[in-house]
Image (cartoon, rainbow, N blue to C red; front, side, top):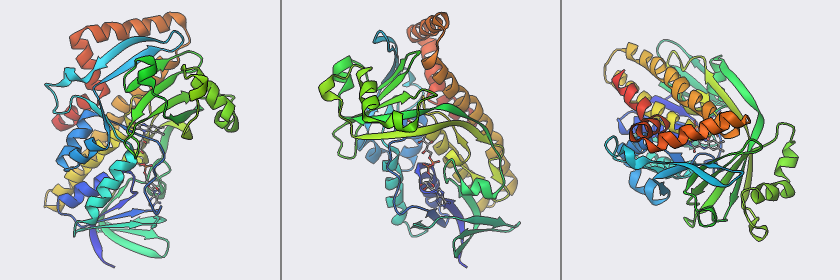
Length: 397
Ligand SMILES: Cc1cc2nc3c(=O)[nH]c(=O)nc-3n(C[C@H](O)[C@H](O)[C@H](O)COP(=O)(O)OP(=O)(O)OC[C@H]3O[C@@H](n4cnc5c(N)ncnc54)[C@H](O)[C@@H]3O)c2cc1C
């Protein structure tokens, strides 16, 4: 059995970035993916400044910008009155990063881009249609089973998503909870910016039903919008997906009757969970395999890519002779950062949108307005919301 340095399980955006980072450091890398092609259902698109910095280091940034949309601002709205509450502008981060904006690029584009690069590298191998079924390890190596096939590696990165087989094979608990409601994503060609005067990233609070509106480029680069809604707790999946209720939801964000056709629907269960451990021996968890969160704020995928980058660096250093003990830094650094920046912020973001108490709602809007108007607080809010603060802290640690 040929042994490689690193085996990555899962060709989502995190696994492909991890594999590319490790291969660019010179390691021999095999990437294993169950499916025959990258999943292109509408999930993450918001790419935060520190993630753009990583994509620049990986040589992907020009292509990434070409197939996405640059969005300098994001806005909070009061949905019942359809009024803008506050706008935040990434330009305030110009002193902190070369990328004072987010880029809205659909996550499957990133995974496909990284796979294409890997396929052109002599030290990398991509095997699609090859699902991992089990893992064993001893002090010297890891053996990964994919049905009848076996692969040996010095280290394994489990980036196989929220239902991770790698995490389950290691017996690692996925601590946290699942929200009672689901989130519905409606993809439409209706131009919300033209109709409402909003920007490309909008969070609309409403005690009955909130809505977030994002513009993405689409595969044809012609542009389309994603409207994300919470479902009612007692609403069945069939009801949420029904044509009548989708059209009613679009009407509630002022889409006129003749424009309520949609391109795609997606209904998701939403969780807040963090793996009890991010590592066992020579096997590491990264991305959704290690943590999941609600998507409000666009942080889950971004944090996964930061982990992949951090882990690739640590593994590279160990493969070049540094002590194995530096690998302890991975969990010690990444797990608390995920809890403090990703879990806490996404729970707070959700609460802000759905707040039912009128007094608390008014206070929350007032706080957003004051933060937006105060240059120091505006910047501090963006440093945290963009994960730049967590990234800088990770470097200092
Ligand atoms: C509606 C929605 C919107 C979102 N928006 C954002 C956003 O704007 N910004 C953000 O940062 N995050 C966002 N997220 C979260 C983001 O989509 C996830 O964090 C991201 O997909 C995680 O990437 P990943 O590579 O870790 O896992 P995945 O994308 O789940 O990829 C895992 C891969 O592993 C493969 N796999 C699974 N099991 C095996 C196996 N046994 N063997 C081999 N391969 C296997 C799967 O087929 C898959 O290709 C959003 C999520 C949702 C649902």
